[in-house]
Length: 117
Image 1: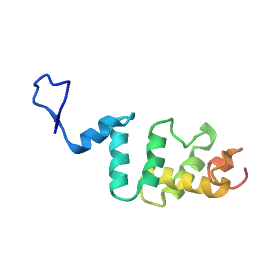
Image 2: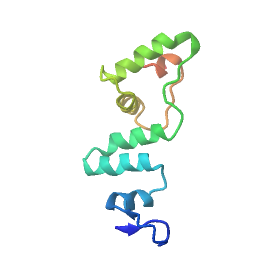
Image 3: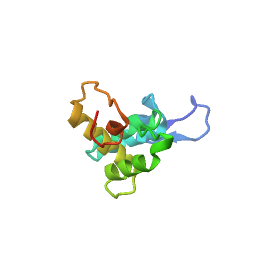
Image 4: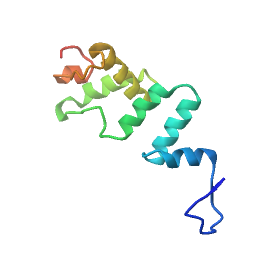
């Protein structure tokens, strides 16, 4: 364990996980997601969730299309009741469609997974 706070004798120590988290330039919760995801062998979806948590929500919900947006989000979540899994599925669908080449959804149908573009 390493002392915390510059050796002031406070008695607090960093664990091995704490040392890794302290070295990452991200929110500690996002860092823990990344470290644990790496340890469990599921880093790719954890990176997607971490990116989503670090920015504004990826699901754009227009006032006139809330029901459609909620239905699309539910399709991405695949009845698992998880916003994080919905984000991973939405990113995977986007990556399959656009190849990760910086393409953009051009219409609300594209954003809601309903075709169009």
